[in-house]
Length: 322
Ligand SMILES: [Zn+2]
Image (cartoon, rainbow, N blue to C red; front, side, top):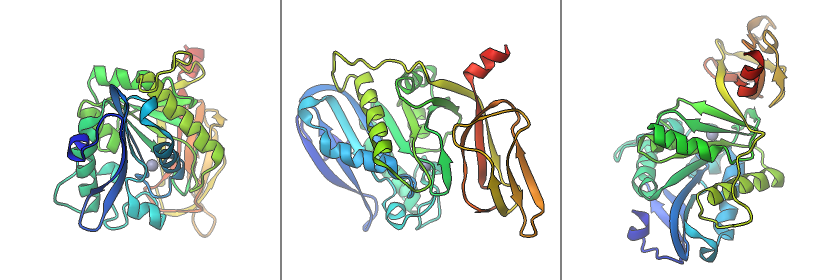
């Protein structure tokens, strides 16, 4: 329990360094409101090239004051510091493991397993709600969305879904993931979401502003940020994706996507082609149904097994077809 262990009292803000190994630690900011309430745990930087969330949490750690909070916020802007500072795609450089596939963690293990363990031991126990902020990776273009869980109990899944609905992102996607930072939290009984905004190893003021607005909406939803005039309302323009395809490369080759993030697509449409160095087509990605592009690789060279494109069918499309 981080508040007790690091002696963080009501009305206090403290920046602490939580050790993972003898040489690696996580910088965490704990803000305990002057009045009591729920605790929101915010994490980012699980993947080293996903900058919008990390910058948003760094700023919020500075901006949020105990006086304005009814409840508590714990911020971990960079969950994978060595990946972040080295600009590493997807993995923790020390062990080559994707931290978002390393849950549950291990007390004794490689750095990813230990980092996951520390997050479970130190951050999970305080959390009434958890949000993990991601972006498209260095090689991914992405349309903003929120993943909500299917791995929890009905109650936990429903609470997570209700929170996802107040976010300004256009799509929410049901996720079956089980071994990530947020999806393992869900299985431990903590309502949680994984948000995605920005990509390609870039960040902008506008994206950070949008992410900050989403985090503040979440805080109002949890009544941590009391604001009588601005109750968090459901985003009526947000569509639910119940059916999604994550198309992977069946060969190593040159990838030529033919879509844009968020673009509407028709069944049978070619979303991109994978070629060998002689220009022969190895794989053609065609949409299995009418829908929208969620994210895709912008890398020219891709390895077998890597994601080429993800697309989904928004609920409004079902309505049209029924
Ligand atoms: Zn990510």
